[in-house]
Image (cartoon, rainbow, N blue to C red; front, side):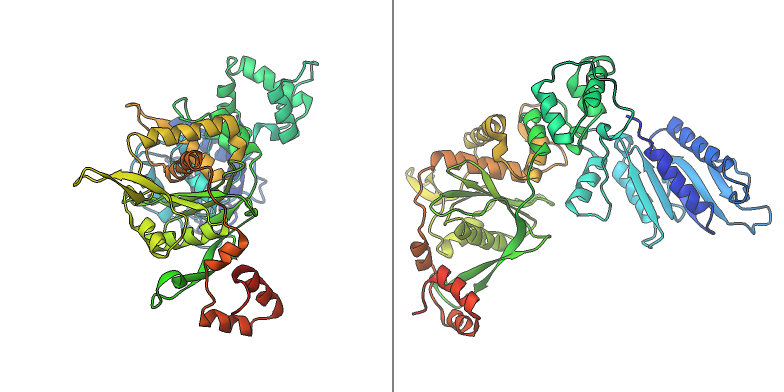
Length: 503
């Protein structure tokens, strides 16, 4: 799909280097013929500049335009076109304007090459880096795109689908629309002429393969990064859900009062949800009176870069209503789980206990009243005893994955979190038949949600705590009473709703 991004980028870079002194631009393409094409494009643009704007050009044997004169009194600016994978590219000079072309198709040590290039660009207001590429599965480019989407980098993500190009349409012939075409028309406001072109392109350009069309002519980022056929989950169902997935009602984290000089339940009290755009808890549906909920979690383990993840599932509707996702420590994770559990009617908390038992022990120490309990064999005495937390074993792991496979296939509309579904798209069956995350990807959210649906199915009938019972879980401490007496009328009312009247 040719959209002209390289041409637009070339115009921006030429306009800066041809009108300013001492500016260096670098264009790095994925292969030699592409480098030559880009260099010829810059030459053509330069040659067609009006004489009044055309700077003096100094001869060069390399693929570069040098804006200077024989006496070196000109702009002293240049544009260099290079090929990725040629070794040390970009490390020997400062780059004010950098154009990375078709990053998804670079060969060799892409991370190392990108590291060298990015370090050559100064962090100044007049610097510019543009990365443009066709998607090519899940690699360095997809990781940078995802980081931009999440707000984890300063790059601005811009995606343009085939439906945004005016030339991709043909006169409507009057065919009857399929259900898929009706849904596309509704979601993306497609005209009948656009759908006519889509049918023609699938038939002629893509050999009738609709999956190939989605990869070559994506209409959304998720289609662009579509993986191959070894994904564990139904990609089509995930893609359809991602087209209509909601944004969180709000995001944030819990603050709470904690005093380790006291014993019992008073150690963690007065949880307050702090709303912030950068929060690591995403709320999609608020708790409903009388509903029971399951709160499942996956700990980070000992792999660098792993996240703590958790999901809240409405046991009545099967819907995912809240998500926790954060790189943190075990103590903070456990206490945020307690607060989130209380928020959702004292949800059943089922935290994975393979790597560490500490989060479950901390939740139990703080006397949270609704923790998942499993049967465990005593290796010493040979008997069975109860233990807190969910154990992922050779038996339970396939079952929890199967539970999630069923949910995505039959009720994908129950999953509201975009990042969770993104992880599902990179959860594959490897060459040895094991179901796991692709190399370099994470499965924290996948495993957490899988645990939730597995536990929900086996512990569906829980007791929902009533509001009066919830009030008994906290006591009016002297500090809390002092806060009450100092508070305004509205704050007092909310505190009384939560903790009952002051004794």
